[in-house]
Image 1 (tube, helix red, strand yellow):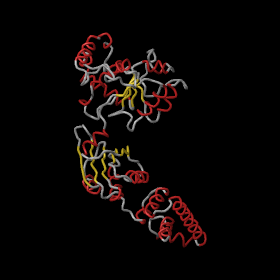
Image 2 (image 1 turned 90 degrees about the vertical axis):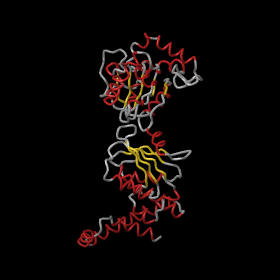
Image 3 (image 1 turned 60 degrees about the horizontal axis):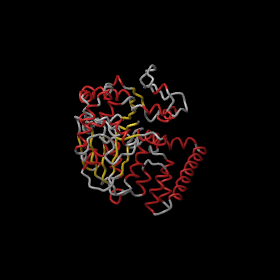
Image 4 (image 1 turned 60 degrees about the vertical axis):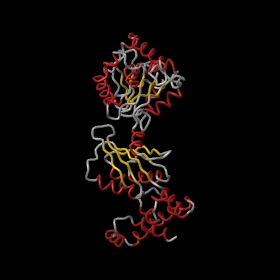
Length: 399
């Protein structure tokens, strides 16, 4: 049985009883970083192990497998957890759970009793291949070595045997499958006919949206903004081409650069920015991209950030041809923007841009060959901008 388990964003008190039940019952823990996950288990062990020993947490993994058939919930709610509409049945379930001391005796949050296996974007494909029996083992360098354990997933290529154990997947923080390999794992389980369940819990995406107070029936989730400026600007232009709010994640190392890009591309937008949600140093800001940039450039911006951008396509995207040509963007993106601006065919504009660039480069090479000394002197005193690019822009604006 596979269970996808959300973990707290930063406050241990946000862990759910169902998550504790699944984590305590787990034989195998698939996770992004084994060091982070072992530390989380250790902290939960210190705080909540007494609840586990007293059978006060639901055994989510086993009850879900028995009652829901994995990924399909039954009409009563999917497992033996206490439910709002269960009434006397809920009390009976709790009594049965407390009586079932034999089953829960082995349940613990102690990380020493768990098998931790690293599953991340760099090894997911290889892991699935090995787990399917197409390679030797699903082992990796971060796995806990325990070759004497017959239940060790590194000792078997049998997919059924592996998931006959209580297997859970947790991300470093928050809800799995959002910007992490959890989605690939669920897709793999579904394709292989492996029963799985997903527990609800903390999610930075929904928490940031609720914090923002934005009123909308829909929004766009952009994930993490691109690291490189050119790709990030193209991404922002794509995202703001809608009247819906945008939610995106950003690291402290690129926050100011991203705000500067929003100030350039969507100056009239408003951004709700929040860092370290649920943690001790949680703090939020609101304003235009430029005002936030001025406020944060001298502030402590350490921590993970979530941005909620309210941008109107009609109000924000006020770029003329010169603005577009001066942006560092892929040629295809530039062509698409110019096509919208002039109501022309993007393919034709793209072809013209390529031809003009090649023509400018050929002209430059010709001049340098005819008079090398003059070309070097001109290049020495020319502006820092690429002359071929400037020539291309000038020719296109003349059309």
